[in-house]
Length: 382
Ligand SMILES: [Zn+2]
Ligand SMILES: [Zn+2]
Image (cartoon, rainbow, N blue to C red; front, top):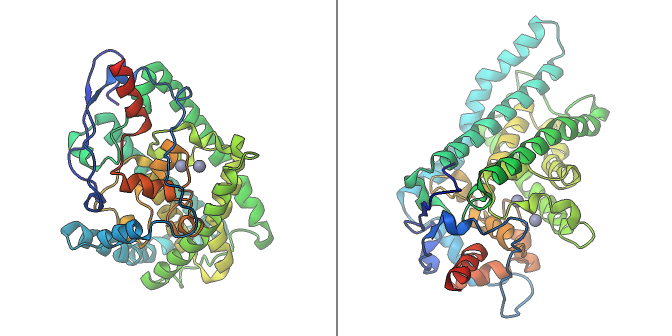
């Protein structure tokens, strides 16, 4: 990251409209300097609240919702790219599986190992590599601060390394990585083992003769997304109650989230807020699902979450072609303001409960300054 402590490098405001721009005119944010941003402290600056007109109830502000949904499919080159990517993804993954999975089974048989065991290791390995590769892509964007990517930022607020300085950021990054390693090794692996013990392993087909077709992967991704979204929304909303927020507070240390923050959470949240929603769809399907399809679901869901936390929204992203998909700015708003917008991939349940009314209010108001930007402006005026 080009940070942070001594020189007054300019943080560029958004260079061009985001993909949601057409529904509302966005105020051009002022340039800030890193020198200005140093005054902010992650813990010391509470998120500001958006004041709404007091409307409550379900399906708040349908007009904005439908405007955004229509805009998602407005005719353009990138719309075509993301729609083709979304439809083509399961078919591409099916083709890769037809090549890769027989090698896994052959390897197990040639070495006298249980196919299910080797298959589980292969799923963990492929999923882990995809996670690292996706994070490496975002890390390169953050580190090199590539100007051509600025146009895809959902906000112009400073990153945590800008706010905390080199040593503060190193400390936060170290804590994040240690917590994530702990979650993956000490929490995820044993929990997955425990919940699949009654089947003697993951309850999916692991053979090389029934590799899922593109169509099968497609409907299973859709099914798992809908089930996961229901579980994620409600567990997330519970984590925001007074009694349980001490668990969720860890994840909310990131006011300006980056991709890796997606899995930075308290171990209890990792189990009840992440793992259970994630496995609920596949464990309902059981042997209707192939191990390779489960692997694709892992990659798909993790990639969506990394993107939601990345601070960027790319016009070519296949996730943005999913109907009612929450845009990146939606979860960014959640981290910024800590006000509603509990849904993960879709935003159906937020609409039902009216828990995204503050977000829509903010959109209709032309997306006024973020809380940090506002704070710096106030400090400069004094
Ligand atoms: Zn939250
Ligand atoms: Zn989050």
